[in-house]
Amino acid sequence: MENQVTNNANALRLFFTEEVFLVKDESVEILPLGNPEPVFADENVSVTEVKESVLKPEIAQIPQINATNIPKVNTQEPEIPQIVAEPLTEKTFKFLGGNKKSVLILVNDNQNDVSSEQGRELLRKIVKAVDLGTPDFAILNYANYTGTDYQTLHRFFKPLIMLSFGVEVAELKLNLSWQNEIIVHESTRIIFAPNLHHLESDITAKKLLWGHLQKIK
Image 1 (cartoon, rainbow, N blue to C red):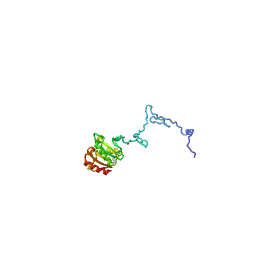
Image 2 (cartoon, rainbow, N blue to C red):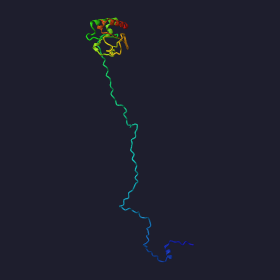
Image 3 (tube, one colour):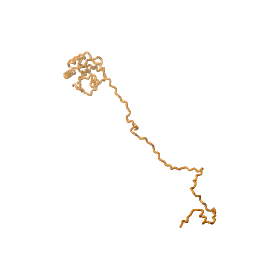
Image 4 (cartoon, rainbow, N blue to C red):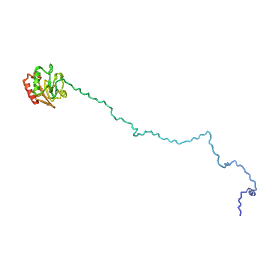
């Protein structure tokens, strides 16, 4: 049997001989077919793209500390000027003799360079008794340098033997005591006796002195 389905318009008129009327139904809205037209937004409507605001906390930028930019800390102590002690001016003395044998003879006379005539004669006998000549000893009149201590005299004369006539232990600021015996102070042998002028007439003191001179001869 042949297929009775046909799309031919003339053939269809043979079957549909009655008139067909189309009536518009106002109650039924027929949507147009096809692609819908694009809908445009009204011109006065502003569409703003809203972007999510991401707040990032600000981080303080701390400069890196490298070996080259490490701040230098001055650890050097403030310079304090040193107090330099002034060198002591060496005291000088006017004396008689040459002091070649380091023998210092102290006399104490306010009126004469050495002593009275009697005193000078006694001194000549003393130095002769110990075999000393003028170049060997130094004679200093302590009356011209009152207050000078032993240490000052020692620095200048460096005596190995010191004969003190009329100059007391206390005047030389020596912490010693004269007991009519030869005093050995450090490397110096010291003999104390009365002033030359008075010694000439003091027989006892003179004998004692002669005994000491024999020991240092």
